Image (cartoon, rainbow, N blue to C red; front, top):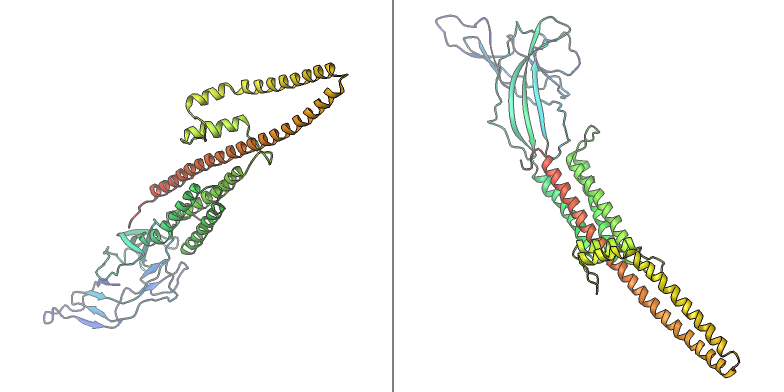
Length: 405
């Protein structure tokens, strides 16, 4: 800290030694720079003090001699370390900018006794910091009136505009988290048959929790604002949990079949197997899927059900009438009756075999439909979560005040 001031009474006015200068201890009136807290200080000889100090020592400077010139100019350069409190706004962390200031003023002498002159920052001996850069600096003088006195008091404020360097956080937190989320999106490309599909999503969620814990240790513990990086990690956490739940839902679709009484409704089959599959350019095995077939299927949705019920009822009536005719004609012929019983047993066995075969084919078809529906839902999840991750990253990058410092 360097002080320059002029005395109203020069120490040498003789013609014989017009340029004499000397060093002396503190025996003349000086600007004594001490540290003041926010509490009131009474009966003090302090002339200029530093406000908002957090230094435990009242005077943080080392006492040195003064250099006094013949024209009354006094030069005093006491070394010292000044500690101040600076409120941090972590809303944009790690793309944040902080403003801190050193405020010097007088407790004892008003403006009419001391006139503070504006100086400037001297960065000739400044050592660059690995976490912060000095973006801007300014010095201004202000006048303030206190309740205790009618006089005006001046103070000088040295303001530092600091900007945080982002390379460390981008390389150690943001990029690993983003790459982990890419693995989450790529997990949707795995086949639903693999059991590692859910395990991968759970591992991604645990990794995001670790990154979130590391970020919490780097930021100050405050409830006034949520840092921007924390919003990004929380968004990734929510996306990862939703992706895990979505993967479980996809696998539940994949392992459904006719055997466990899960059958698709017409609306579900139309949306997943036809409309969504056509939209995603996916084709069901041995089935043509175009916009014309989709329209035709939607127009015939009621007619197919009505024709199925009518055909079933007609077939039952035909079998019943045929049975009555045969019984009435061969009622007195025992040999014919025995033959009919044998044919009935053969028919029952063939019918049972055919029903089992039809059930197997139907179950295979239903299982194939559910597996294809799981693939369609999985593809929809891939596109949805990819878009959600890209949108979240884009919004965070746009809202940041800067990206590289």
